[in-house]
Length: 171
Image (cartoon, rainbow, N blue to C red; front, side, top):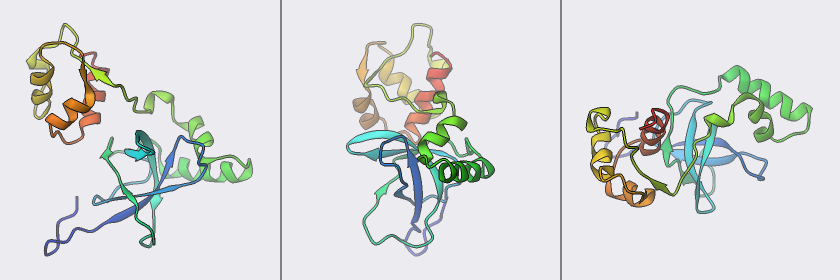
């Protein structure tokens, strides 16, 4: 992460590939220096969606860009060589980056957004650690609750990553 310099944060701009019919890169910003190939959560037309950092934009755009909402993983899901191959394939076959990337990244790598959340019966507080304990406390009654309410009431860093982890653990 970047350290502030006299109260000023560095801002990085990224070309992000999204699964939409846009067919081109979208530019988003972050205070974090992110690697190509990682998944991020971004907002597009009032929806949260998964995007993949393609590369850094060399110069600040002349328009206001939206921020990256959350970094899903800090280790790239797709390496630079595959990104380069995907770029070549998209030009050669006259396809969008998104359609080519779907060949490399399984749909399981997509972050799926759901409206409501609850704990499964077998979950105990011992299954949670760190900030996730706050999540357990909110969900302890095991009733379905709106995920937006949970996110607003628990300021957990990497909220969606934590949810995805516990979902994969079937908790």
